[in-house]
Each structure stands twice: as structure tokens, then as C-alpha cells.
Length: 130
Image (cartoon, rainbow, N blue to C red; front, top):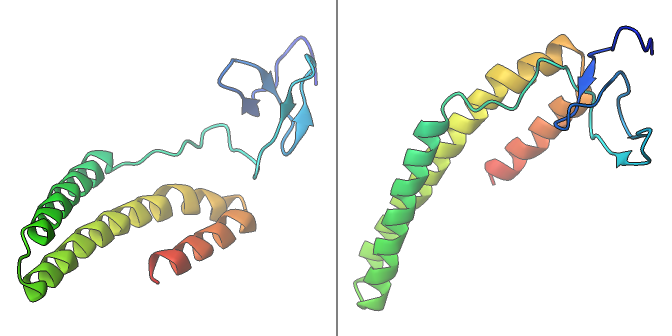
């Protein structure tokens, strides 16, 4: 790496700039571990963060209501219907996160031929749809 002109391929949060990817040791002896190469312009941005947080807050409130129903010995069928609604709200939040991930992270992975990220997405989808 040229000391006169810093390589901005990889920037750490502490400001250290270098061109190494994967696991490496910094000049101060700090070990840095990365699970995949980083595009310096790629950030894990959740475009619909507010929407996801709103959906999850509603699901949380609904779940608290279901817990009160159980505590109040409400009819099992009613409880199951409400649990299904909670599960649906959580699944819908997951769909928004998945859509954001595909639009941002996976598009970047395809451009950079990052099969590791694509494999990770496939594993996450398998877990999500169980």
C-alpha cells in the first residue's frame, strides 16, 4: 500500500484505512476478522427500518394482549387466532427485511460475485420459512 496515497478499499469505524480483506492483523497488533469482503460503499442499510420497527412494536403489543388472554383463562380458540395474528405480523416484518436485503445487499453480492453472501441469504430464507 502506498503511504503517500491511502487506499480507501477498506475503512474501519476507527478511521483506519487499508486494502486488506478477510482476517488480518493491524500494525498495532489488533486482529480484525471479516466474514466476507467489503465494498467500501456497501452499508447494511435498512430502507424500511421505520416500517419494520412499527410492525414489530404492533406485534409486541399484540403478544402482550395474548399473554393477558391466557392469564385471564380466555377460550383457547380465541388465543390461537390471536397468536396466528402475531405470527403473521412478525412474518410480514421479516418479508420487508428480506426485500430490503435483496434490494441492497444481494444486489451488491451479485455485482461482486460474492457467493458467500448469496449462500448466507439462502440459509436465512430456509430458517425464515420454517
